[in-house]
Image (cartoon, rainbow, N blue to C red; front, top):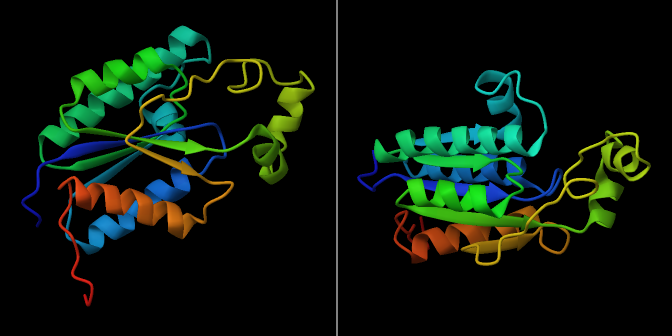
Length: 183
């Protein structure tokens, strides 16, 4: 087991921007390095920890605060907690940052046009046509981070390039041990 302290790796970005995909890729990389890792995926948390909450601003904020609280419990016990939830509002992300001493925000950026193009469920088309109300980034706001520790763009970067950017940051800041070049 790694003797490194726990921390929170907080992914934020619009639906379909690559948060869950990258969080699972990073989870695998960290497990290869013998790190204790837990992933709190937004959809899973909604199903298991926030069942019954809707999509009003208050309910979204409550859901994100719950994720932040669980992340705090895990990270203070030495786990690397990776969160992958839209978390659309800056003030609530800042509250989660404040409750977690070691907090790394990753912004998964992508244009609405690209998200609409790659959306297999057609949710963006439905939101754009008004069929779906309160859709983040269309009819509900998304406040992009101004000072995320790492910003990746899933439209212009491959998953591997994004993964490398994040891992390089974590190694460079001493959050995770570096891997020897010939390892």
